[in-house]
Image 1 (tube, rainbow, N blue to C red):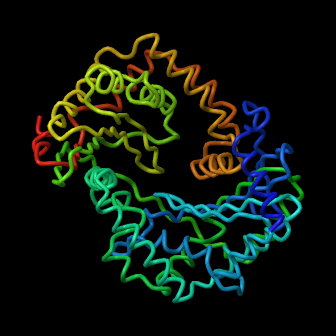
Image 2 (cartoon, rainbow, N blue to C red; image 1 turned 30 degrees about the vertical axis):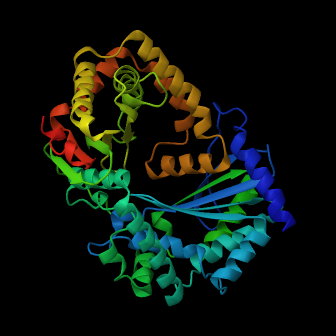
Image 3 (tube, helix red, strand yellow; image 1 turned 90 degrees about the horizontal axis):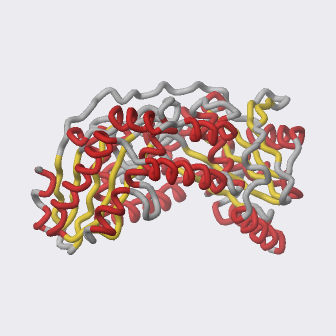
Length: 441
């Protein structure tokens, strides 16, 4: 227990304190003696070690009719494993002063283990148990599946979640990006431990894996850790991408709910990280609907018109087809006006670009927020995973500030006309009857 307490205190410091020399992050691409490639960032600031193993096995790889299988599979890695039942395994990890996290996304699943430096050998054994020796028992499968079903039911009645999911369904049509990560009730209830084992055997392989290591650890120690954690995983193969080949027309969906506020989601297909225009797209998005009070949507709709407390936009860069999305929440009677104002601001930014002060504020924000995106060990590991999975190169973090500085206002104007199109915006409104026809104009 003392080890866990020390680990918890150090973890707080790791999250709050940025990496030293964040603009010069040395990412080493290495290979273990057993032939496993991995990336390493050494950081001697705190006696912590973090390892993230990721597989291209996210919800996009759920078989049709088995939506939710990816999330169920990765969730079970943190249950019975290594010959231990779920309770014993959890106590074993905690006793090491370690923490095991799992995450499911559209494209990938990630298993992250963070531990004290002195516990790294035992921590590698724990990670090996989770990744290479999961039990996938019937009882665990049933229990986790039922817990996921509870979340699905909760999301069904959450108007904001419902609006977001309906928008993705309309934008992506039959592409698997269109279904929720946790699947549907009628697909979850059919999943069993046999389905989980088949999915695991197909996607949890060395060829379909990226490994990232960060913290107080040498290259030799990191290689030994990775070999110990991954040894025994089959070679397998990398799955083929499922391209987004459908460009949907503008659509409008109204979902009536007896609530005083309408939750609005608008969007269309967007951009991915490998696109040369991605830095310009991020600056464009900040000026239009980014965080804080300087974006056009906040100024016009919240501050000046007083029509919405929450309004903004973001770029969601998936592996094979990202989205541009706008969100807002307003009184039912104001939904039509808010949607019209959002479209108007998009038209204006396409017609005239952004002003000099907007340009400088966007650059300042992107450069200032960059250190926070890699501030803690887990943040850095996630960025390293993205860099590997998207083939962005080991210098991606170091070159990002310069790429932001090199974007001109003319670039942003061009990208606005390339990426944003109010005529293609699909609109979803979940709210009271007064919002019924809000997206028709």
